[in-house]
Structure formats: C-alpha cells, structure tokens
Image (cartoon, rainbow over all chains, first blue to last red; front, side, top):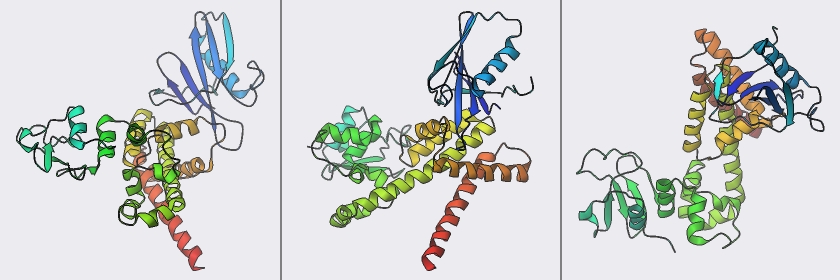
Length: 100
Length: 239
C-alpha cells in the first residue's frame, strides 16, 4: 500500500509503511535519469544490498510498470539512502498500485 | 558586555523617532506588529535605555536586549547570547540555555526574575518541564501532520506547524515531526499523536461527513487527551 505521494518537481516520492510494528514509514524516491530510473530508499532488507527484494522496491516497480506502459526503460538503478519528508514537497494524488 | 538596545535597533534599520533619542524611553516603529507602520506620527515600540528592555504598547511584545536582537534579526537566542558572551565562557545547564520566552511558556520566567536562587536550585525541574512541553507540542504537531497528509492538505499543515513552532518556541518542531514520519519505527510521542489523529479523523467524519475541517478536530482531540491525562494524574495522586 502507498500511504502518500509527493514530488519536489524533480523526483517522485512514495510513502510505504515499514515492515515493523512501530507504525513507521519508508520513503522511496523514484527519479528519472536519462532513459532509466534511480530508486532510492533505506529499509531493513536493503541495508547490505541495495538490490535486495523488499515491498518498497516492489511498489516502485509496479508503479513504474503501470505508468510507463511501452516507454523504453534502459535501466533501473537502486541506491540505499534514507529519504526524509521535506517541508517544501508537494503532495499529489495517491497512486493506487494495489489495483494493477 | 551587552549592547545598547538603541544601537541594536539602529543597526537593524528600525525607524526611530528622532525627538525621543535623548529621552529615557526611545520610541521607534514596532517591527513585530507593524501596527504603526502606516501612521508617520505613531511609534509604538518603546526602548528603555536604562534597563535595556523593550515593549510595544500595541502588541505587548517585550523582553531584554538579547531577545530583541534575536527577534529582529531572526537569529536563535543562543546564537545572539554567544555573540556577546562567547561560546566556551562557562558550562551551562541545559535549562540555562532556555530563552526568556521559552521560560515564560513553562511559567519559570517570573521565578528566574524574582527568585533567582530558587530558580538555580530548580534547574532539573525546569528542564523536565521544558521537555514535557516539547513532547506535548510534538504530539500535537504530529497529529496535525498525519491528518494533513490524509486529507491532502500537506502544504497547509506545514504552514500551520511552522506557526505552532514559532508560538511554542520550538525552532526544530517541523524538522522533528517530518523526520519522525520518515522513520521506520515511530517513537512513543508519535504513536500518541497517531491516536489523537485517529480520534480527530473519526470525529470529523461523524460530524460533517467531510474531512475539510479535520484539522480543527485535532486540536480538540489533543486538549481532550491532555485534560484526561492530567485528571488521571490527579486520581493517581489521590489514590
């Protein structure tokens, strides 16, 4: 589930619940770089390996697949870095990826 | 050594009434309320040279010279204090780092002013009171943030929390709540904020069937929770 979606004009940020019981969140940054995308976030699963599978990565990929359709994506690069919600971000309508 | 309050006003471009320059109380335009801005004859801000204090007769903003410089320059109180007294002059207790405005919010300003010895002996209590104040304000701000995001009013709620931060003298409030929201594990105060947001959300839905005014219900739910908590404390004491 995506709880909220934001943009800073250059990238898309999705808020996904963390896996723990503390009701926390993981914010995933999806940024277009040339003909590819860079997906950045930090969670317990991707601490050692930025390419490791996790729900946050899965949501980002489903979202990209749903919205890019036939758009050629040459690469998807993963990075491990904690993203913090910023006061100047703009909230945009939630994108429901669970339906696709 | 402390600067003269009139020098601080001049350095920061405040418009002083030249006729009062040699008087005990120097008058100038108030930069806080701007109520005298459109009337060339009116000067609401009074600067007391002898006491080195200021007061606006319109908005009642008042304080000492360091608070004055901090307010007109927008610099944190501590930074202004260090400018005149240096950084490593003395090791201060965290309670001693609180500004007069911060002390006023937890009702310790009068004690410091009139019963300094008692204040010095109570520094642990002062800082405990300040931490309790910060915790309460974080809970309220976090509840607002959750409701703001839920109702797609993020920008409005950020402005609201910025205003709250100014009113309750916690400069890091916005950063505190945004950083907690982005954490994988929320701390206890955030979970309390979540409960308040839940109550507010439910009430707003029941009352108006729309969530436009859900933010109002956050404050109501917050003060209800604070009230319940203090009542509970009283019962605990009685029991």
